[in-house]
Length: 92
Image (tube, rainbow, N blue to C red; front, side):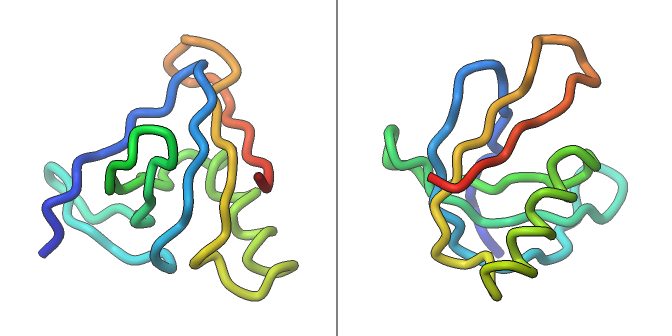
């Protein structure tokens, strides 16, 4: 069982190295799909929940074009501070 903390993405871009393929993790009262990630700037191991479609869709597309997600470096940012604001994901 991983003791990583959850990454809460906000309007400040995070440069992440993906350290796993998606897997299920029990969060709160349900299973969610997550990725283990490494925050390059803070040098911290975290996990990223992929519940939002605007986050999971571009990651899925990267997995199709790149073959695997593991070891990819990406930038992740939220478009605004609104609760349901969309995420932007790009290769670093």
